[in-house]
Amino acid sequence: MKQAMVASSRSGSYCALLFIDLDNFKTLNDTQGHEIGDLLLKLVAQRLTQCVREGDTVARLGGDEFLVVLAGLGASKEDAAKDIETITDKIPAALNQSYQFGNAPFHCTASIGVTLFKGDLASIDDLMKQADIAMYKAKEAGRNSVRFYDPTLEAAVQERVALEADLRLAIAENQFLVYYQAQVDAGDHCMGAEALIRWQHPQRGMVSPADFIPLAEETGLILPLGHWVLRTVCGQLAAWATRPELAHLAVAVNISAHQFHQADFVDQVLAVLKNTGANPLRLKLELTESLLVANVEDVIFKMRMLKSVGVGFSLDDFGTGYSSLAYLSRLPLDQLKIDRSFVMNIETDDSAVVICAATISLAHNLKLMVVAEGVETEAQRYFLTAVHHCDLIQGYLTSRPLPVAAFEAFVQTL
Ligand code: C2E
Ligand code: CA
Ligand code: CA
Image (tube, rainbow, N blue to C red; front, side, top):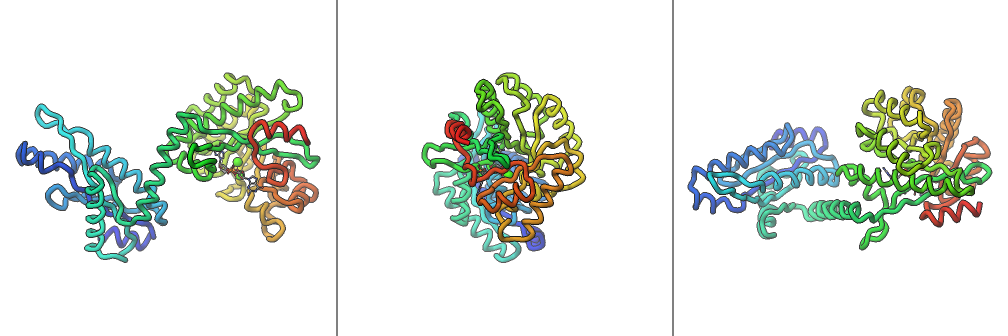
């Protein structure tokens, strides 16, 4: 605990103390004898050790009480809560698996109390008490559960657990929609759209992707979700191809790093194109700079494969991440997107003006198109398109993201 406290004061990251009490140890001890009881304790210790990372600590306090110290969690309470959620899912799952003693399988659950700490603001004694109190709350809640000393943390973790369960259900029940947000050129012709996912939750109403995409990424649910968006958009492209007034539209699909890094990503896209009959020239994939952190060679390889059939690439949120100009010239991109955070400040902040102008000129020198997103005012549009020749603009000034029928109607009014 002392070591964890020192490390945490230095790094600013949270640590957690878990108090774990087995729920029916006494029954086993009384009915099967102490030798079997000892064996269970050893197996529990093994399973706990397998659940934690290197650098975490598992200890037996006495009797059937174990302590776990988790170090190096997030620096904010919210991030720490996310980190803990994974482990507090894992521990009960590991402990609840049956134990084989002689002929009959034995089942054992645990009640877990959690408290968070940072540095040495609270004494070890106090932390032990907090974790113990939380553990008693878990017992009161009917055993086999996890409780937190801090009620706000508890609420945050429960909210995430509920949202994750909802998200799984939503995928099974297909509660999602794709909205399309127009991208127009200097002459106000709609050249295409960005596809933006929407979750129509039966109780919560429309949930913003900003609230569920991060969770989908952490849980891996982004894979089925991202694939669904791709299929839906390609189906739409194939439908528009038969309508002369809509056949020219190109649609950009956001691809998360996790999705792109799958070994068979290229094959997935090719299969969707083939199955839907969409024209690859009308499909753009929006990638973010975060994708370039790992294995740039592999990224370039995949991009080339897809480009060879006609799929285009756009670099999203340009300038907000670790933009490396060296990569920029090596990647087979077609487009840069100027991030909304720059566009938004064009009228008020000189550096935003410089960044927008420089990005447009950089892109044009690299023979890339430029899309500015989040354009909300005439002044921004004038600066971007009339003064600096930005190719396309996207934003509330032209249109909000719209359901497909409304988007089709909008295109035809231009
Ligand atoms: P993004 O890719 O940067 O998308 C642009 C966001 O800016 C969208 O928010 C859009 O509605 C919003 N926006 C567009 N014009 C304006 C404007 O003029 N003013 C303001 N204030 N906002 C504007 P949205 O739809 O909530 O999406 C948020 C983020 O969720 C997206 O950011 C993207 O990172 C992610 N996302 C959305 N759909 C998908 C998807 O299908 N797959 C993946 N992986 N991520 C998605
Ligand atoms: Ca985007
Ligand atoms: Ca963006």
